[in-house]
Length: 364
Image (cartoon, rainbow, N blue to C red; front, top):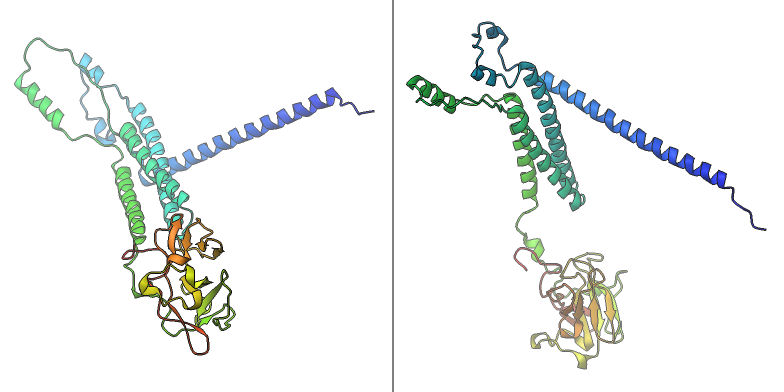
């Protein structure tokens, strides 16, 4: 008989699971609120320490200010009471400084990611956060800390007096009373320095012009072909359709010198005329470094005489001087001229036809 499940136990289990999920959500919400209040309190402390809390009205001169007459124009000028201005200014300073600190931290993260050669995705994310937070800080500064007052005045039927027009012109061309000038100055200086450091870091990626080492063809005439275990390679080393990896003597394991040695039937060769003597007894030698992205080309398809790069599937026809026949590679593999000495040892007849590996500044 099959066991029957108790529905009451299942209901209790579901209830406990729902209660646990609800408690987890509540803890997360409380944690976020505590983190926000902590950050807000820390920002208020920094603002009060470095920038102070200046009132828009000079305390020493407040008592000497003339009391305006109770008129419609005077009431319009009281749209921003003193207490509201201070509260608005403190809240704006907190938001501006928080956004600016996020931008600075993102800029530092960009520099760290760049100089440690981390993922490019992190470069984009930190750069976007840096400029986004900086833009938010500037927008908040403009909306929360710059003066914005409204005043209305009834339109009179008669023309204004000369004194009124002079006073209006002075009011119109008067410089605005910016709040928190010190905060704006430090934001501008720090942001400029951070962006300058990021730009200088990016310029580093341009690198220096290629030196003579990049144009080296590695091999030189007379170098004997060696196996990875330093064995001698003779004309009897391979049968048609077989391949092996070889290096020049004295440079075993050199990444730029690694060469794939292929043997084909001499009658199948379709090399250019100037390379007709480079393949004794059907031996062909090509650089093993792919001209696309520098991966190691080592897969050989004997029926079609194609070398293939396993990274991005570029293929090269060994019978036609390793011309690319598929994949992203646009240049043929550099070929190494060969000859056999009196002892039957295969040797290099010179260097590669061009520097091995992907193209660079002066070699597309």
